[in-house]
Image (cartoon, rainbow, N blue to C red; front, side, top):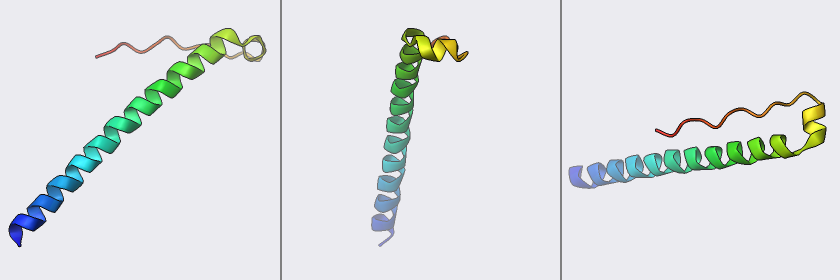
Length: 58
């Protein structure tokens, strides 16, 4: 039974790590899309929106 519990805990940890990685990827893509939107949308620029520089990759 201890082996089953350990396996379930490892699976949960792996799922959590995968979820974290996917969330980071999605946020990175959304940030890039918003940066392009602000750069190329005159209305947003007129409202005072300024594009942020792209973050450095680690």
